Length: 384
Ligand SMILES: Cc1ncc(COP(=O)(O)O)c(C=O)c1O
Image (cartoon, rainbow, N blue to C red; front, side):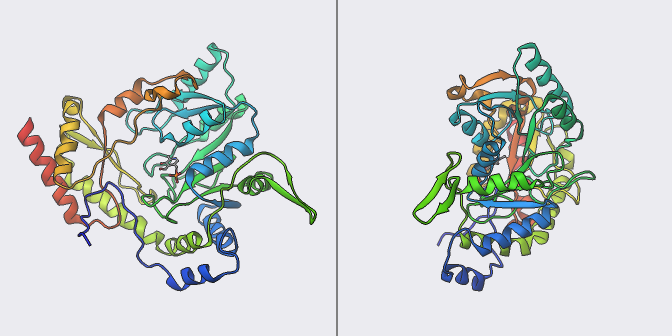
């Protein structure tokens, strides 16, 4: 077996402390999918996020898709941030809907009041009527939806929060997943996320009506009727169930969540300390904050050094330091050009050019950050 190098990936799962007794039991149950362990996991996620209801599913993309279907818009016109994973855009495209790309704040990578007001103004000029808005809580951060949600209410736009990066984060006003300002919040439990079920996802909501729709949509929307006429199809849907073994893993991860959060916070704080004299070259965007469960460690290269980003990434790779760019803006995926009907992208293009993700996961130690720091310092001494 090859030796694991903690800095080789920007993110990595941590499956320590698994309850193998529970995992064994999950395989010996009469029902090995979508049963009591999933229910228990849903209850724990509900309690942890402060939402009334939770539905577990097979990944974060499914969580977004089911939530969009539950809003029951015939031809959805959906506002999403241009800095975004590809999930939401692909779903809208496949559903035959239309995408409106909202610009983000240059530093945080998230939509803010200003960029949201601007996109709504542009929609009005072009006589476009959006019906859903899917903001992202990016990198572990918490997006303030207070004022934005008021605008959405006035415009009759439903909100689905994409909380895939920010399970366990909060600020003074909300905890991600409490769905205080939205119909739904979606989560991914992919291996690099704050907790994992290997593959998996969840949706939280405070509305019983919404929750009932999700339950139906999760299993094809087939309603059992009679023994000789077993199913009635309500709305076409697919299979999004979570397996019992995944829920058992999720339950073990919930026991480690406090530890995972504090390890990530300590690593972020150490990054901030180590890189404090790098002002001229780069800015770490993560903050010291006990309520944030950091998913990504992200930096911006200062303008003068942006042209060196690719060389830096290649150099760090040669030193077994994994980096990533989160994300290529959705506007730059040419295949989606007929689905995108409006784009505001000035800041997101700037963000894209300067953003870089450095390694952050619970298998790392301070000495790994020393190693990353040493190599970045060496690179800029040599090439500038
Ligand atoms: C912001 C965001 N949304 C949605 C997803 C989709 O989650 P999954 O990979 O579990 O389908 C991801 C996953 O990487 C994500 O980062």
